[in-house]
Image (cartoon, rainbow, N blue to C red; front, side, top):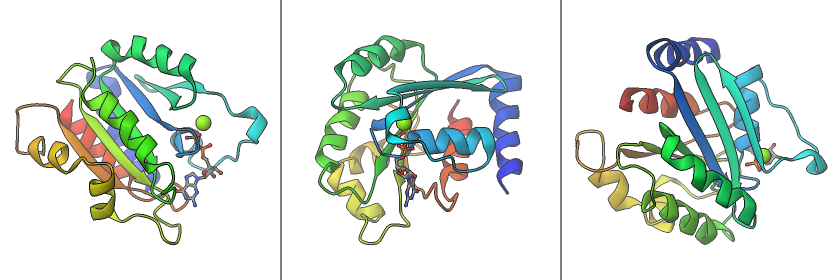
Length: 187
Ligand SMILES: Nc1nc2c(ncn2[C@@H]2O[C@H](COP(=O)(O)OP(=O)(O)O)[C@@H](O)[C@H]2O)c(=O)[nH]1
Ligand SMILES: [Mg+2]
């Protein structure tokens, strides 16, 4: 149930420590949708004209800041400035958009190999798994070229950056609860 896990996580993040989470991904990946799910527990459709490049919200002690990557140099410069202050990064990718997957890969590599401190965990959400013909987990690991990052820095390895991939559907409210639980456990 939505409320169970969200309060678990808010409790963990918010009462024991205050946390800053950065939510990034190409535009159209599902970031705003996820924020509205977290905030209202339901999907809110944004009109194309009312789609901000960056958004911020606070729940409990957690600040969620979402940035669109790719095509927006301003946003990119903005989140780079914020990066050193982040406690965790959530990277969302649209698994049904095979045309832009290499663009997403470039952005993700930029984060994993960037000035983001090595102790900041990165969780990757392969979103829109409900769409026909989308990439599955194995295909996504391959096309994003993150097999190594996810294995090498998997849960049992304390060296390097903690990095994990979860498959999600915001439409069906699937997968992101597990992802946030994993993230909370890394902090
Ligand atoms: N089918 C499907 N559509 C989704 C899912 N998540 C988001 N969307 C849709 O994808 C579009 C872009 O989502 P949005 O949250 O605005 O992306 P953002 O640019 O990353 O903030 C919207 O029309 C959403 O309704 C999902 O899991 N499945
Ligand atoms: Mg958005």
